[in-house]
Image (cartoon, rainbow, N blue to C red):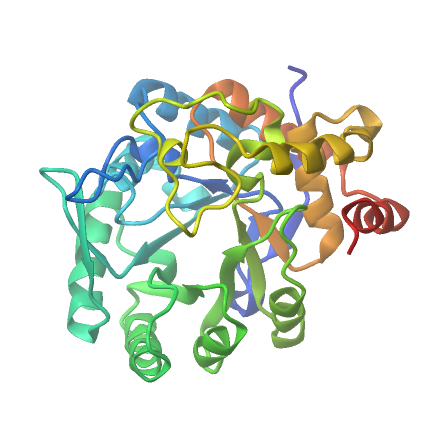
Length: 335
């Protein structure tokens, strides 16, 4: 792949934090590897090669990616450890985001209950700082999407304490509910909302809220859990430890029988000509749609290999889709 010069990477400001990040972040859920609920529901993306994950992160750094998003629960702590190892002495060159709120057993790699108490937030932060081998976290995010708003207001105030203590620089809530997002947005150092957004699943209310509030719109599932890569076919099951092979109710686009939903694949196919314009791959076109969607967006596609890191980073040089292409996408999808 032709090298992308760092100066060609478009930067965006992470909301009200003043932190500059690359327009593309990297989501570190997949590199956490296998973990599950106590009853065996997979929560990871299958087996991973830690050495390849480290190489992929370092390749992304070389290509100008400066924003990495993980969570303490991903791989039951494993994702944070792999990210710390990969960054090493380059930690100061990047913006690191992680999340808290879900209790887990690191030794057995099992998920547990959620804990929305301020006391647990401090314990979780201390543990993440240790696993990430850092003295501060740039963006600390509540990972309980449906937390009680009154309790969330307490957690927002707790995050303000963390800022004053120098443990974090800014905070956010990972939620798809604009009313809940507004609770955190009332805090001085709230910088973003992390929410689902991709060309198949628009979120106009949340995007508008981020724009009006001066917050970054951090886009999880920017490639619709892989459907927008063009690598899935109907009826083809994924490996046993992959969450998409036994999708929970909150994960659309995949069937309980294993494999991608044919209806979703048909929509992807209908968009293919638009998204692959300008020499883009399908995944690069999906990212280009997000950048065109709003100046506040920062997509965080997942990755498990150097090849995926290069393909995703390569989208930046090709730029966003045009306004007419956005309109055409809406027409094709009937919205």
